[in-house]
Length: 351
Image (cartoon, rainbow, N blue to C red):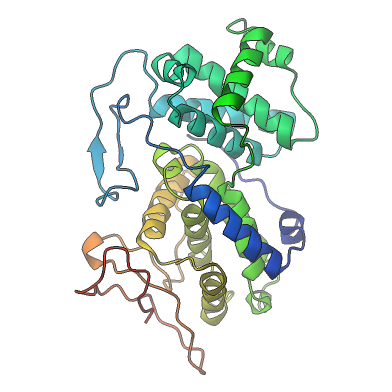
């Protein structure tokens, strides 16, 4: 996807709504449970797609590329998903809806297509049916989460005669039924919103715009991440952490001190149990940087070198933030592999 422009925030408070740490901790706990259970989707394109991509997060070598089974004519693939996501952004931007509506709608679409229902399977085999499902999930997301709605007849008009109002209403009923009316799952932007509550006041000592810059860059990465099918198979919390870490690395240490940034990451880790230096987060960071360059035409600067992306699997070791010493000294994250590291270990040290 190309051409999506960043929309600056007026202030961080407008996005976080002055949430308390206690409220955010409770909400994050619920969202973590949701993303791993009810609102999790599967690799529904595994049998359709012939394009090269990251392997799914469930595989060990998910930082490598692989090829799916031969493409079947008329079947849905990654490109179909990317084009429909781009179309959804065009509609929401034109109508002045929040871009979060697109993330919500695509999450509906992914979960619908992950189901085994006959209607979902038909959509995977017919691009026309898939397009109808994509348009309908946007229609549902706007209806539920936006103060103004798009009428089904208007959506039919936008389709230029491909679908009528009945087609959209029938698809809506099928999607709601297949999703079990569970329509309030978390998106990446939700995690970003709550993670930013842990940002210490010291982060804005040298520049009071640090929090807004972090928000804008992280939110933009979340928006372009919606287009990427492989990222949709990862936990939203990992993508949110990845977006924030990439944003942090783009700010010079003279502006956002090493002590403040590690205090921020430590607070997230202590309060939520999440690990900002996990392998999944590292993979998501690398992918987001690629998507940022592809979409904007330039690289997102990574200049601080305090929490760098580890490019080699052999050099990666699972980390966790460690409290700084009394002098507040910092150093880059250690990437020495522990020989006795357990496969799913969540403990390690930050040098």
